[in-house]
Image (cartoon, rainbow, N blue to C red):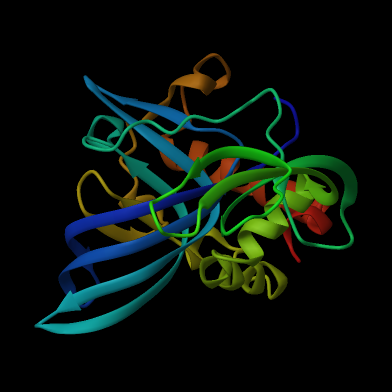
Length: 255
C-alpha cells in the first residue's frame, strides 16, 4: 500500500457509552489518523474501522453532572449503517478542492470581482444607469439607478498540508492540540497507552488483546493475513505502521 496517512474528523453522539466511571451520554469529536477506512468481518457481522493514533474529546453527563472527556485512542469501530440517518451526504469538489485562506504565507492569486451598487436618489440627479423613475404629484421625483464597477482582488489559495493546518489549527484546534501534544511527547508510542472506541457496542476499552475479539478479519488485508494471526496482531501491526509513517513525515502531521 502507498505510504500515506489521512486525518479523519468525526462528530460523535453516543448514548450510554461505557466509560471507566460508568455509563454516560457522550457528545463530541474524534480525530484519528488512519491509512484508510477498513472493513471488518466477524461471522455475518460487518463493521467499519479506523486504525491509528487519535483523540476523543467532548462532554458526557454522569449522575446529572457534566464530565469533560479527553481520551487517547488507537481504534474506532462503528456500524456504517447507523451514520447520517437524517443528514444529507456531504459533497466535495474533487476537481478543484481549494479553499480561501487569509494566511499571508500561502500562494496568492488575483481575481476580478464585479460590484453592483443600487442607489435611490431624490430630486433631479444624474445616475450612470437609470433603472426606474417615480414621480408623484407635488413631490420630488425618486430615481433608482445602478452603478457597476470592476475590482481586482488578491486571494490566498491553500491545499494539501497547508489546508489541513488551516482547518485543524483553527476551528478544530481543541481536538487537534491534544493529538499533536501526545505525538510530540510520544504518548502514543505504546498501543496500550490508547483505547478502543467501539461505537457499535458503546464501549471505550484499553487497546489490549483481551478487549479485541480474535475472530475479526480486516477484509482489505485478507490475502496477506496469516492463518495464525488474530485480530489483535492485525490491528497492532497496522497501528504501528501508521505511527511510524507519522514520525517519518512528522512535519506534515505535528505542528
